[in-house]
Structure formats: structure tokens, C-alpha cells
Length: 195
Image 1: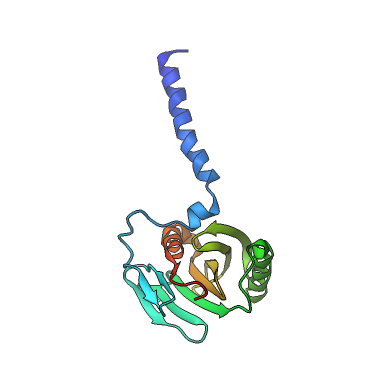
Image 2: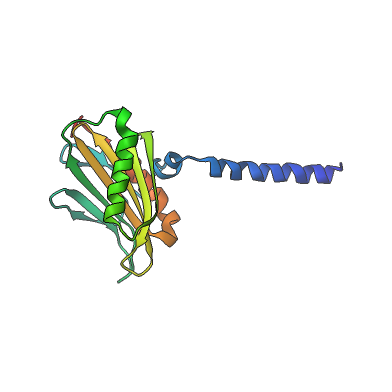
């Protein structure tokens, strides 16, 4: 083996290792992670003295109603769809037992599938991260602009409250939004148990 062919082989292996690492990354590493230097986020905002969350800079904040705490939408050109993040909550009758999270995730997925009859490529995973457990549901559905949207739903139980952080963006451009959605979800911090 010549020096040149050895160098070529080493270079090929060096290129293959990062590719293998990327494909081996878990859902949590891709969809639930804070950015090291989040320049494109405002400082954490405290809502209802119950939790704090970091939201994208230059997105428009909108108030919620009934079970919705807030929504933020990306500012885009007129009639162009962009990203949306909304936070909903529901009261639970009892705190969720961690041993039942897998069953709960499957039940929540079935409910989403019933509501989103035209949805496709559904997936669910229970992440052990953040304030405890996070139910991660994702799927595609027809969007308002005529192309598919990708929906990512983080369900975060905190005491007697189940928070649902729902993130939506055009499916064709989801990789642009993934770091924003991942950081926002991972920045969700309960300030008191059961809030």
C-alpha cells in the first residue's frame, strides 16, 4: 500500500465516522436540545409565575384563550407560511406515574391521529429529558398553503398540569426550524411543581 492510498483510506474513514454519528443521534439530541449560544432567542420569559421559556427573536407573540397560554409566529412575507409555536395546557386529575408514560404516549398519539385524519408519517417517543419525561409526537399534515406542514408536539407533564408545546412549519423546510423548535422545547422550565 502506498502512502497516497493509505492517506486516501484514512480520509475516507474520517469522513464516514461523522456520518455514522449523525445517523445514530437520538430524537432527543435532534429535537430536544438547547443551543450553546442562542443569539436568535430572547431571554427566558416567565408566564403566569408557573414556567419560563425562551422564544425566538423577531417572532410575533399572540395571547392565548381558554387552554392556550400563547402562540408565537414567524414574521414572513405577505401570504407566506412560516413557523408557529403554541403552548396549551390541560389539568390532570392526578400526576402521571412515570411507569405509565409509554402507555400515555400511545394514547396521546391515537388522539392526535383521530384529530388529524389526513395526517401521515406519525411517530411517538418518550424522552427522558428536561423536567422529567417528555412525550414527543411528530407527523405531517396538509398545510394551509397547499403543501404539507410538519407538526412536532412536546407533551410535558408537571404535577397536575400537562403542557403541550406544539410547533408547526412547512415540511419541506423543517430542517431550518428544527433547531428553533428543539431549543424552545428544551428551554421550558417549570418554576414550581404542579404549575
